Length: 187
Image (cartoon, rainbow, N blue to C red):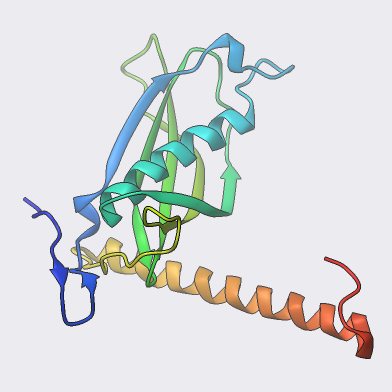
């Protein structure tokens, strides 16, 4: 059983936690009001559900408020149909000083057939930032992997973070090059 986090006073950062401390699973039944013109559940509804699930994990891991900073990636593998049970599973994959990458897996099962295995229909990676009461970033606990899968997730989260940083730097460099000596001409 995981313990409640404490603060390591030497670095003013909460002590590291395992992914299992904040890992969750949520389920809901999709409704007709969420359907698009094709009769499938709107992708935005699935993103909203995944974001809500990731938000719970981020709040649990950080021990307080956390906000969505980015949706790093969202992939849809199969449609979600009206009446499907939609299950989301989420956990912290990686952490920075105040940020957390939360991985979410989306699965479905027909509501009327418990013998059918859950089908993996989508995955997402959200970036959350823990905030204090003034809305400023605050330190988050480190991450202590418990399994080889946790270590893999941490490694992949580091790769995604490196790509985000490199992409941001390349975009900024391109903007500076395009603006010339007179400075940036617009966002």
